[in-house]
Image (cartoon, rainbow, N blue to C red; front, side):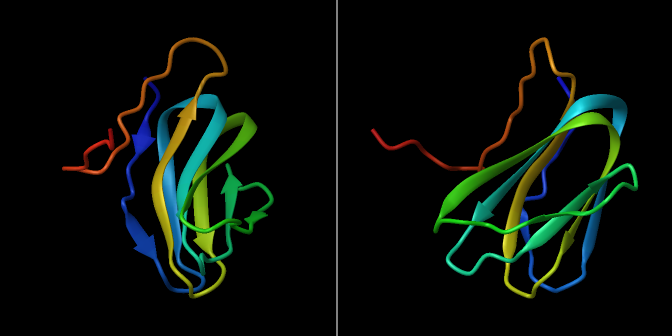
Length: 111
């Protein structure tokens, strides 16, 4: 299993950063965020590279942002003051089995 950052809280201030350093390099980065009606625009950069801006779309949706290429350090940054909820960041290889335990403590599934 690749290293996973669980960041189950909101970033609701402009120009705030969070840094994730993987225990071992990977070739795929997945950033999981929850969009609300007024989700913030945010960016990410990998290993000090160019910032990539993400503009959330859709209301109350889970968005998975993927990037490929050798990666070890991921920095996410809020660009606006609206809240964006980050659920996790994962750096992993492109093949093999990857298991993640993402969820909300105490949540139940609808039947």
